[in-house]
Length: 413
Image 1: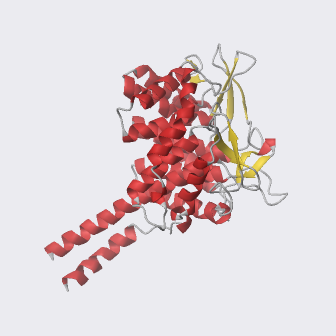
Image 2: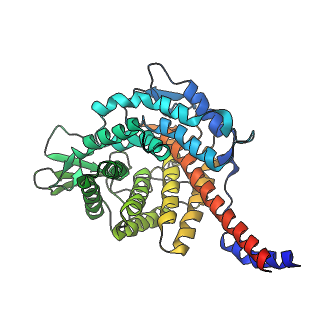
């Protein structure tokens, strides 16, 4: 009788945590199996996967490429997932020592610390080293990488503009900043924590503040590129590079913005960043079509059909929404963002989880104006695994809350 009463009391609690079902493919053995196969196929000297052919075969690029940090970081992400979800034959997480593989794959990035051609994308290059410091904060190799990459990024800051320069230009007065750069600010904050150099934190926050002022439209959508005069700080032009049109909203850029501002709020507690992340999330979610598939650009024409999707924009947005839910001060918003992330993940899994391909997902759009789409993308796969990790952690927390509630109820009944 006591057990029955406890279960009856538990019903409202279960309802409070009711969420859309999570796609089973997230836990498929194909995920670690494919990642391990890719690791075993890395060229020597090392190159890294960036995107696939339209038939699913990875194409590899030299380390001095902006995406090179994602695959080593993916190996670390599988280690984190293994810590939350114990390895079984069904999930194949026990196939490898993912940390060892991540460390090995990261060695090709170390020479880039002395200098590279990736402009503002030092943050992406630093990803595996940030993952290493989560495991071993005293790892000097990782510490040195964070410091070196942050030094390169900080040198691109212009206090008159209030931003770090994204892309170099033949005209030194043309100071180009892209919305993607919000993702690189975490590197500056990590380096500030390591060194005590508060200037790095100030640079990150100033860049975010300037982005709020100039990159975001009144409806919460974003421009891809804002060009400033480097000597006056005046905005010269707002345009796109990878979107449909200068006045359109490129979905991956919008996703970078959601994630970037949610993370800035997490790291600084500045409320403006939370408010901005909410605005960008609202626009993104309000403009997803009825089929739930994130298009490559929200304003791209529907004809000729089908309008290409971007699986990478979907997974980045999903991860950004889960991060926003994690830091959200309004519990109802947190539930809404979590449910929305799961819905996006379900839709893109149904479309793009492609078993025969070397990548986990297909239907990525690298650069539609350059006719590079319908591919797998390394960062799309990375954020697919990362969002799975966040959902696993959230599920474990909920299970613990329910178990603790049930135990206390049984003891007192």
